Length: 179
Image (cartoon, rainbow, N blue to C red; front, side):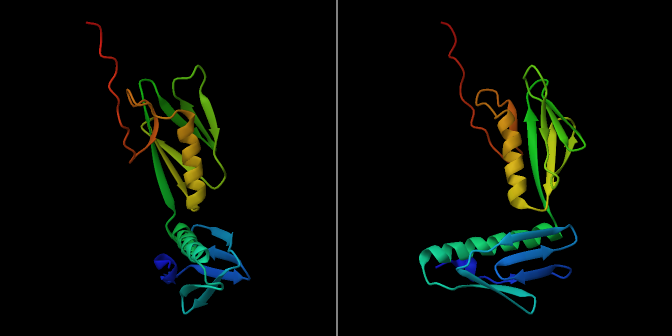
């Protein structure tokens, strides 16, 4: 049984929830998010609290109820506070710049890599090596961050590349050297 799916979601002040059939729309200070909910999960809003129940009793639907609850909760957190992800560029001569909706990465290739940011994601660069991404949609933010990281993944010998701020790179020992 899904313990996460059983928990109610409290709706903070200033957040408007609009439920029409299986379409949920969350509006807050930072923007609006909407999502389609699977038909096996029933969503009820009562006195500023959202409750989710199963229409069909099965293990698979229990798992989807927990997923749906988390997605709705992330939508509410996103329109109230927003989400932030930090990437670090490591390496000699490696740097990043942002101008408008384009992130320019100099990461050891012969030409700089221009990465076009989606309209919902905003980026800023601190000290040429720290990329701060912000968005109200957690799923979109994670996708964009992973695509930026793919431009130059961190390598295990010197740790050069683009990594998440809280990511730990396991280092390998280099060559033993000549005797």
